[in-house]
Length: 435
Image (cartoon, rainbow, N blue to C red; front, side):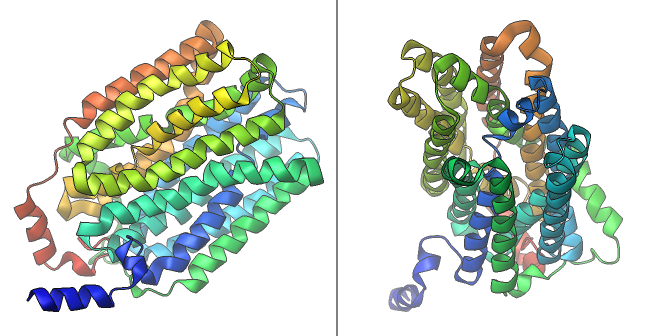
Protein backbone atom coordinates (compact mmCIF):
# COMPACT_ATOMS: atom_id res chain seq x y z
CA UNK A 1 0.00 0.00 0.00
CA UNK A 2 2.79 2.38 0.92
CA UNK A 3 4.62 1.66 -2.34
CA UNK A 4 1.43 2.31 -4.30
CA UNK A 5 0.93 5.64 -2.54
CA UNK A 6 4.55 6.57 -3.15
CA UNK A 7 4.20 5.67 -6.81
CA UNK A 8 1.08 7.84 -7.13
CA UNK A 9 2.85 10.72 -5.39
CA UNK A 10 5.82 10.44 -7.75
CA UNK A 11 3.48 10.72 -10.75
CA UNK A 12 1.79 13.79 -9.32
CA UNK A 13 2.51 17.02 -11.17
CA UNK A 14 4.73 19.51 -9.36
CA UNK A 15 1.97 22.13 -9.51
CA UNK A 16 -0.37 19.83 -7.61
CA UNK A 17 2.32 19.18 -5.03
CA UNK A 18 2.66 22.90 -4.23
CA UNK A 19 -1.10 23.37 -3.99
CA UNK A 20 -2.04 24.61 -7.49
CA UNK A 21 -4.46 22.26 -9.30
CA UNK A 22 -2.61 21.61 -12.58
CA UNK A 23 -5.74 21.93 -14.71
CA UNK A 24 -6.38 25.42 -13.27
CA UNK A 25 -2.84 26.76 -13.69
CA UNK A 26 -3.75 29.16 -16.51
CA UNK A 27 -6.56 30.43 -14.31
CA UNK A 28 -4.14 31.55 -11.60
CA UNK A 29 -1.95 33.30 -14.19
CA UNK A 30 -4.95 35.04 -15.75
CA UNK A 31 -6.28 36.05 -12.34
CA UNK A 32 -2.94 37.68 -11.52
CA UNK A 33 -3.01 39.77 -14.72
CA UNK A 34 -6.69 40.63 -14.23
CA UNK A 35 -6.07 41.88 -10.69
CA UNK A 36 -2.95 43.81 -11.75
CA UNK A 37 -5.18 45.70 -14.17
CA UNK A 38 -7.85 46.16 -11.52
CA UNK A 39 -5.28 47.49 -9.06
CA UNK A 40 -3.48 49.96 -11.35
CA UNK A 41 -5.70 52.86 -10.31
CA UNK A 42 -5.97 51.95 -6.62
CA UNK A 43 -3.12 54.14 -5.41
CA UNK A 44 -3.74 57.22 -7.57
CA UNK A 45 -7.51 57.45 -8.14
CA UNK A 46 -7.92 59.67 -5.06
CA UNK A 47 -5.20 62.15 -6.17
CA UNK A 48 -6.68 62.07 -9.69
CA UNK A 49 -10.11 63.06 -8.33
CA UNK A 50 -8.77 65.76 -6.01
CA UNK A 51 -6.74 67.17 -8.93
CA UNK A 52 -10.15 67.96 -10.50
CA UNK A 53 -10.59 70.46 -7.62
CA UNK A 54 -12.98 68.14 -5.82
CA UNK A 55 -12.86 67.51 -2.04
CA UNK A 56 -11.57 64.32 -0.45
CA UNK A 57 -15.17 63.44 0.38
CA UNK A 58 -15.87 63.03 -3.35
CA UNK A 59 -13.16 60.36 -3.56
CA UNK A 60 -14.49 58.71 -0.40
CA UNK A 61 -18.01 58.68 -1.87
CA UNK A 62 -16.78 57.06 -5.08
CA UNK A 63 -14.93 54.35 -3.18
CA UNK A 64 -17.93 53.81 -0.90
CA UNK A 65 -20.47 53.48 -3.74
CA UNK A 66 -18.07 51.20 -5.60
CA UNK A 67 -17.76 49.15 -2.44
CA UNK A 68 -21.54 48.71 -2.21
CA UNK A 69 -21.74 47.14 -5.67
CA UNK A 70 -18.63 45.05 -4.97
CA UNK A 71 -20.34 43.84 -1.79
CA UNK A 72 -23.53 42.83 -3.61
CA UNK A 73 -21.61 41.17 -6.42
CA UNK A 74 -19.30 39.32 -4.01
CA UNK A 75 -22.30 37.88 -2.19
CA UNK A 76 -24.01 36.86 -5.45
CA UNK A 77 -20.89 35.25 -6.90
CA UNK A 78 -21.26 32.01 -4.94
CA UNK A 79 -24.99 31.60 -5.58
CA UNK A 80 -24.71 32.49 -9.27
CA UNK A 81 -21.81 30.06 -9.67
CA UNK A 82 -24.01 27.30 -8.27
CA UNK A 83 -26.87 28.25 -10.59
CA UNK A 84 -24.97 28.84 -13.83
CA UNK A 85 -21.49 27.42 -13.24
CA UNK A 86 -18.49 29.60 -12.25
CA UNK A 87 -17.06 29.95 -15.75
CA UNK A 88 -20.22 31.60 -17.12
CA UNK A 89 -20.29 33.93 -14.14
CA UNK A 90 -16.67 34.88 -14.79
CA UNK A 91 -17.47 35.79 -18.40
CA UNK A 92 -20.18 38.15 -17.17
CA UNK A 93 -17.80 39.72 -14.65
CA UNK A 94 -15.14 40.35 -17.31
CA UNK A 95 -17.69 41.93 -19.65
CA UNK A 96 -19.08 44.25 -16.97
CA UNK A 97 -15.60 45.41 -16.00
CA UNK A 98 -14.56 46.19 -19.57
CA UNK A 99 -17.78 47.97 -20.65
CA UNK A 100 -18.06 50.29 -17.66
CA UNK A 101 -14.33 51.04 -17.62
CA UNK A 102 -14.64 52.35 -21.19
CA UNK A 103 -17.59 54.53 -20.13
CA UNK A 104 -15.63 55.71 -17.06
CA UNK A 105 -12.69 56.76 -19.24
CA UNK A 106 -14.35 58.10 -22.40
CA UNK A 107 -17.32 59.95 -20.95
CA UNK A 108 -16.09 60.57 -17.40
CA UNK A 109 -12.36 60.96 -16.79
CA UNK A 110 -11.49 62.34 -20.23
CA UNK A 111 -14.16 65.04 -19.93
CA UNK A 112 -13.71 65.75 -16.22
CA UNK A 113 -17.32 64.69 -15.55
CA UNK A 114 -17.44 63.47 -11.95
CA UNK A 115 -21.08 62.33 -12.13
CA UNK A 116 -20.40 59.97 -15.04
CA UNK A 117 -17.24 58.74 -13.32
CA UNK A 118 -19.19 58.03 -10.15
CA UNK A 119 -21.96 56.09 -11.94
CA UNK A 120 -19.62 54.12 -14.21
CA UNK A 121 -17.16 53.29 -11.43
CA UNK A 122 -20.00 52.21 -9.16
CA UNK A 123 -21.45 49.86 -11.80
CA UNK A 124 -18.01 48.54 -12.68
CA UNK A 125 -17.88 47.28 -9.10
CA UNK A 126 -20.12 44.38 -10.13
CA UNK A 127 -17.36 43.09 -12.40
CA UNK A 128 -14.28 41.92 -10.56
CA UNK A 129 -16.02 39.94 -7.77
CA UNK A 130 -17.96 37.85 -10.31
CA UNK A 131 -14.70 37.06 -12.06
CA UNK A 132 -12.39 36.58 -9.07
CA UNK A 133 -14.76 34.90 -6.62
CA UNK A 134 -16.29 32.82 -9.39
CA UNK A 135 -12.80 31.43 -9.86
CA UNK A 136 -12.53 30.83 -6.11
CA UNK A 137 -15.66 28.66 -6.33
CA UNK A 138 -14.07 26.81 -9.23
CA UNK A 139 -10.93 26.22 -7.15
CA UNK A 140 -13.00 24.83 -4.28
CA UNK A 141 -14.64 22.40 -6.69
CA UNK A 142 -11.38 21.18 -8.17
CA UNK A 143 -9.14 20.91 -5.09
CA UNK A 144 -8.94 18.03 -2.58
CA UNK A 145 -9.93 19.09 0.94
CA UNK A 146 -6.45 18.30 2.30
CA UNK A 147 -4.92 20.93 0.00
CA UNK A 148 -7.66 23.50 -0.05
CA UNK A 149 -5.79 25.79 2.34
CA UNK A 150 -2.77 25.84 0.03
CA UNK A 151 -4.92 26.34 -3.07
CA UNK A 152 -6.77 29.34 -1.64
CA UNK A 153 -3.39 30.64 -0.48
CA UNK A 154 -2.32 30.66 -4.13
CA UNK A 155 -5.64 32.30 -5.06
CA UNK A 156 -5.01 35.18 -2.67
CA UNK A 157 -1.36 35.25 -3.75
CA UNK A 158 -2.55 36.01 -7.29
CA UNK A 159 -5.37 38.27 -6.10
CA UNK A 160 -3.29 40.43 -3.76
CA UNK A 161 -0.29 40.19 -6.07
CA UNK A 162 -2.32 42.22 -8.53
CA UNK A 163 -4.55 44.38 -6.30
CA UNK A 164 -2.86 46.56 -5.32
CA UNK A 165 0.71 45.20 -5.26
CA UNK A 166 1.88 44.94 -8.87
CA UNK A 167 -0.92 47.21 -10.03
CA UNK A 168 0.46 50.09 -7.97
CA UNK A 169 4.01 49.26 -9.04
CA UNK A 170 2.91 49.34 -12.68
CA UNK A 171 1.28 52.74 -12.11
CA UNK A 172 4.40 54.14 -10.40
CA UNK A 173 6.42 53.28 -13.52
CA UNK A 174 3.88 54.15 -16.21
CA UNK A 175 2.51 57.47 -14.90
CA UNK A 176 5.86 59.34 -15.22
CA UNK A 177 6.30 57.86 -18.71
CA UNK A 178 2.85 58.05 -20.31
CA UNK A 179 0.63 59.94 -17.87
CA UNK A 180 -2.41 59.06 -15.80
CA UNK A 181 -5.00 58.71 -18.57
CA UNK A 182 -2.87 56.36 -20.65
CA UNK A 183 -2.21 54.33 -17.52
CA UNK A 184 -5.97 53.96 -17.04
CA UNK A 185 -6.21 52.50 -20.55
CA UNK A 186 -3.35 50.11 -19.82
CA UNK A 187 -5.33 48.78 -16.87
CA UNK A 188 -8.18 47.90 -19.23
CA UNK A 189 -5.77 46.00 -21.48
CA UNK A 190 -4.36 44.03 -18.57
CA UNK A 191 -7.82 43.08 -17.30
CA UNK A 192 -9.03 41.88 -20.69
CA UNK A 193 -5.81 39.94 -21.34
CA UNK A 194 -5.91 38.23 -17.96
CA UNK A 195 -9.60 37.43 -18.26
CA UNK A 196 -9.17 35.80 -21.66
CA UNK A 197 -6.15 33.77 -20.51
CA UNK A 198 -8.22 32.35 -17.65
CA UNK A 199 -11.43 31.70 -19.54
CA UNK A 200 -9.93 30.41 -22.79
CA UNK A 201 -6.91 28.65 -21.32
CA UNK A 202 -8.65 26.77 -18.48
CA UNK A 203 -10.78 23.86 -19.66
CA UNK A 204 -11.65 22.01 -16.46
CA UNK A 205 -15.21 20.69 -16.85
CA UNK A 206 -16.24 21.73 -13.33
CA UNK A 207 -16.17 25.33 -14.46
CA UNK A 208 -19.43 24.77 -16.32
CA UNK A 209 -21.11 22.52 -13.77
CA UNK A 210 -24.12 23.69 -11.82
CA UNK A 211 -25.09 22.58 -8.35
CA UNK A 212 -27.57 19.68 -8.33
CA UNK A 213 -31.11 21.05 -8.49
CA UNK A 214 -29.95 24.64 -9.05
CA UNK A 215 -31.54 24.77 -12.49
CA UNK A 216 -34.93 23.66 -11.18
CA UNK A 217 -35.01 25.95 -8.15
CA UNK A 218 -32.53 28.84 -8.53
CA UNK A 219 -34.42 31.05 -6.06
CA UNK A 220 -33.91 28.45 -3.34
CA UNK A 221 -30.18 28.44 -4.06
CA UNK A 222 -30.02 32.23 -3.98
CA UNK A 223 -32.04 32.42 -0.74
CA UNK A 224 -29.82 29.77 0.82
CA UNK A 225 -26.83 32.04 0.34
CA UNK A 226 -28.39 34.59 2.70
CA UNK A 227 -30.51 32.43 5.06
CA UNK A 228 -27.30 30.73 6.19
CA UNK A 229 -26.54 33.93 8.14
CA UNK A 230 -29.13 33.11 10.82
CA UNK A 231 -29.13 29.35 10.38
CA UNK A 232 -25.36 29.04 10.89
CA UNK A 233 -24.16 31.81 13.27
CA UNK A 234 -20.54 30.73 12.89
CA UNK A 235 -20.72 31.53 9.18
CA UNK A 236 -22.15 34.97 9.98
CA UNK A 237 -19.25 35.59 12.39
CA UNK A 238 -16.83 34.49 9.69
CA UNK A 239 -18.36 37.03 7.32
CA UNK A 240 -17.82 39.80 9.89
CA UNK A 241 -14.19 38.73 10.39
CA UNK A 242 -13.65 38.81 6.62
CA UNK A 243 -15.22 42.27 6.39
CA UNK A 244 -12.90 43.63 9.07
CA UNK A 245 -9.89 41.97 7.41
CA UNK A 246 -9.43 44.35 4.45
CA UNK A 247 -11.58 47.28 5.63
CA UNK A 248 -8.51 49.27 6.66
CA UNK A 249 -6.87 48.58 3.30
CA UNK A 250 -9.69 50.27 1.40
CA UNK A 251 -9.83 53.11 3.92
CA UNK A 252 -6.09 53.64 3.50
CA UNK A 253 -6.53 54.01 -0.26
CA UNK A 254 -8.66 57.06 0.53
CA UNK A 255 -6.71 58.73 3.35
CA UNK A 256 -3.10 57.59 3.03
CA UNK A 257 -2.14 59.11 -0.37
CA UNK A 258 -2.70 62.59 1.07
CA UNK A 259 -1.17 61.67 4.42
CA UNK A 260 2.08 60.39 2.93
CA UNK A 261 2.42 63.09 0.25
CA UNK A 262 1.34 66.09 2.32
CA UNK A 263 2.32 65.17 5.89
CA UNK A 264 5.24 62.75 5.48
CA UNK A 265 6.65 64.41 2.36
CA UNK A 266 6.63 61.58 -0.17
CA UNK A 267 6.03 62.10 -3.88
CA UNK A 268 3.12 60.31 -5.57
CA UNK A 269 5.60 57.87 -7.11
CA UNK A 270 7.11 57.11 -3.70
CA UNK A 271 3.63 56.50 -2.25
CA UNK A 272 2.79 54.08 -5.07
CA UNK A 273 6.09 52.27 -4.51
CA UNK A 274 5.39 52.06 -0.78
CA UNK A 275 1.98 50.60 -1.55
CA UNK A 276 3.61 47.98 -3.77
CA UNK A 277 6.21 47.04 -1.15
CA UNK A 278 3.51 46.81 1.50
CA UNK A 279 1.40 44.42 -0.52
CA UNK A 280 4.27 42.35 -1.81
CA UNK A 281 4.62 41.28 1.82
CA UNK A 282 0.85 40.78 1.96
CA UNK A 283 0.97 38.58 -1.13
CA UNK A 284 3.78 36.42 0.20
CA UNK A 285 2.09 36.06 3.59
CA UNK A 286 -1.21 35.15 1.92
CA UNK A 287 0.49 32.10 0.47
CA UNK A 288 2.42 31.19 3.62
CA UNK A 289 -0.62 31.68 5.85
CA UNK A 290 -2.67 29.23 3.81
CA UNK A 291 0.09 26.62 4.03
CA UNK A 292 0.64 27.32 7.75
CA UNK A 293 -3.07 26.94 8.50
CA UNK A 294 -3.07 23.44 7.01
CA UNK A 295 -0.32 22.56 9.49
CA UNK A 296 -0.93 24.66 12.61
CA UNK A 297 -4.65 25.36 12.55
CA UNK A 298 -6.90 27.98 10.99
CA UNK A 299 -7.99 29.82 14.13
CA UNK A 300 -4.46 30.20 15.46
CA UNK A 301 -3.20 31.82 12.25
CA UNK A 302 -6.28 34.01 11.67
CA UNK A 303 -6.93 35.12 15.26
CA UNK A 304 -3.41 35.71 16.54
CA UNK A 305 -1.34 36.59 13.47
CA UNK A 306 -4.22 38.26 11.66
CA UNK A 307 -6.43 39.88 14.29
CA UNK A 308 -3.99 40.76 17.06
CA UNK A 309 -1.19 41.40 14.58
CA UNK A 310 -3.26 43.91 12.59
CA UNK A 311 -4.42 45.67 15.77
CA UNK A 312 -0.75 46.41 16.40
CA UNK A 313 0.44 47.05 12.83
CA UNK A 314 -2.22 49.64 11.90
CA UNK A 315 -1.21 52.30 14.44
CA UNK A 316 2.48 51.58 13.91
CA UNK A 317 2.09 52.21 10.17
CA UNK A 318 0.53 55.59 11.00
CA UNK A 319 2.78 56.81 13.82
CA UNK A 320 6.26 55.55 12.96
CA UNK A 321 6.60 57.41 9.62
CA UNK A 322 5.76 60.61 11.53
CA UNK A 323 8.69 60.02 13.88
CA UNK A 324 11.01 59.48 10.88
CA UNK A 325 9.62 61.89 8.30
CA UNK A 326 10.55 61.53 4.64
CA UNK A 327 12.27 58.23 5.44
CA UNK A 328 11.09 55.65 2.91
CA UNK A 329 12.89 52.74 4.56
CA UNK A 330 11.11 53.22 7.90
CA UNK A 331 7.73 53.57 6.22
CA UNK A 332 8.43 50.44 4.18
CA UNK A 333 9.35 48.39 7.27
CA UNK A 334 6.08 49.13 9.01
CA UNK A 335 4.15 48.89 5.77
CA UNK A 336 5.56 45.40 5.30
CA UNK A 337 4.51 44.47 8.83
CA UNK A 338 1.00 45.74 8.12
CA UNK A 339 0.84 43.74 4.88
CA UNK A 340 1.99 40.58 6.66
CA UNK A 341 -0.72 40.82 9.30
CA UNK A 342 -3.48 41.42 6.74
CA UNK A 343 -2.28 38.40 4.77
CA UNK A 344 -2.67 36.21 7.84
CA UNK A 345 -6.46 36.30 7.39
CA UNK A 346 -6.13 34.30 4.14
CA UNK A 347 -7.12 30.91 5.67
CA UNK A 348 -10.67 32.28 6.09
CA UNK A 349 -11.29 31.16 2.49
CA UNK A 350 -10.55 27.55 3.42
CA UNK A 351 -12.14 27.70 6.87
CA UNK A 352 -15.55 29.00 5.79
CA UNK A 353 -16.57 25.93 3.72
CA UNK A 354 -15.43 23.69 6.58
CA UNK A 355 -17.78 25.39 9.05
CA UNK A 356 -20.76 23.88 7.23
CA UNK A 357 -19.65 21.13 4.81
CA UNK A 358 -23.11 20.58 3.32
CA UNK A 359 -23.49 24.26 2.39
CA UNK A 360 -20.07 25.21 1.10
CA UNK A 361 -21.32 27.47 -1.70
CA UNK A 362 -23.52 29.43 0.68
CA UNK A 363 -20.61 29.78 3.12
CA UNK A 364 -18.38 31.09 0.35
CA UNK A 365 -21.11 33.54 -0.63
CA UNK A 366 -20.95 34.99 2.88
CA UNK A 367 -17.16 35.09 2.61
CA UNK A 368 -17.61 37.06 -0.60
CA UNK A 369 -20.19 39.26 1.10
CA UNK A 370 -17.70 40.06 3.86
CA UNK A 371 -14.91 40.72 1.36
CA UNK A 372 -17.16 43.00 -0.66
CA UNK A 373 -18.50 44.76 2.43
CA UNK A 374 -14.96 45.73 3.41
CA UNK A 375 -14.66 47.84 0.25
CA UNK A 376 -17.42 50.19 1.45
CA UNK A 377 -17.14 49.64 5.20
CA UNK A 378 -13.57 50.96 5.31
CA UNK A 379 -14.17 54.13 3.26
CA UNK A 380 -17.51 54.52 5.05
CA UNK A 381 -15.73 54.77 8.40
CA UNK A 382 -13.54 57.47 6.88
CA UNK A 383 -16.59 59.35 5.58
CA UNK A 384 -18.38 59.20 8.94
CA UNK A 385 -15.56 59.71 11.44
CA UNK A 386 -12.67 61.50 9.74
CA UNK A 387 -14.29 64.92 10.09
CA UNK A 388 -14.84 64.56 13.85
CA UNK A 389 -11.89 62.47 15.10
CA UNK A 390 -9.37 62.98 12.29
CA UNK A 391 -7.15 60.39 10.68
CA UNK A 392 -5.66 59.48 14.06
CA UNK A 393 -9.08 58.57 15.45
CA UNK A 394 -9.88 56.52 12.35
CA UNK A 395 -6.66 54.57 12.84
CA UNK A 396 -7.64 53.60 16.40
CA UNK A 397 -11.13 52.59 15.27
CA UNK A 398 -9.60 50.09 12.89
CA UNK A 399 -7.18 48.85 15.54
CA UNK A 400 -10.13 48.13 17.84
CA UNK A 401 -12.00 46.35 15.06
CA UNK A 402 -9.08 43.96 14.60
CA UNK A 403 -9.26 43.07 18.29
CA UNK A 404 -12.96 42.28 17.76
CA UNK A 405 -12.05 40.04 14.80
CA UNK A 406 -9.58 38.09 16.96
CA UNK A 407 -12.28 37.50 19.57
CA UNK A 408 -14.80 36.35 16.96
CA UNK A 409 -12.27 33.95 15.46
CA UNK A 410 -12.29 31.93 18.69
CA UNK A 411 -15.90 30.92 17.93
CA UNK A 412 -15.17 29.67 14.40
CA UNK A 413 -15.09 25.98 15.22
CA UNK A 414 -15.00 23.63 12.24
CA UNK A 415 -17.66 20.96 11.80
CA UNK A 416 -16.66 17.52 13.14
CA UNK A 417 -14.60 15.33 10.82
CA UNK A 418 -17.46 12.81 10.67
CA UNK A 419 -19.80 15.50 9.31
CA UNK A 420 -17.28 16.58 6.69
CA UNK A 421 -16.79 13.00 5.55
CA UNK A 422 -20.52 12.41 5.46
CA UNK A 423 -20.98 15.45 3.24
CA UNK A 424 -18.47 14.08 0.76
CA UNK A 425 -19.97 10.58 0.92
CA UNK A 426 -23.49 11.80 0.17
CA UNK A 427 -22.63 12.39 -3.45
CA UNK A 428 -22.03 16.10 -3.30
CA UNK A 429 -18.82 15.79 -5.26
CA UNK A 430 -20.57 16.69 -8.48
CA UNK A 431 -21.67 20.08 -7.29
CA UNK A 432 -19.77 23.19 -8.14
CA UNK A 433 -18.24 23.26 -4.68
CA UNK A 434 -17.92 19.49 -4.29
CA UNK A 435 -20.54 19.56 -1.55
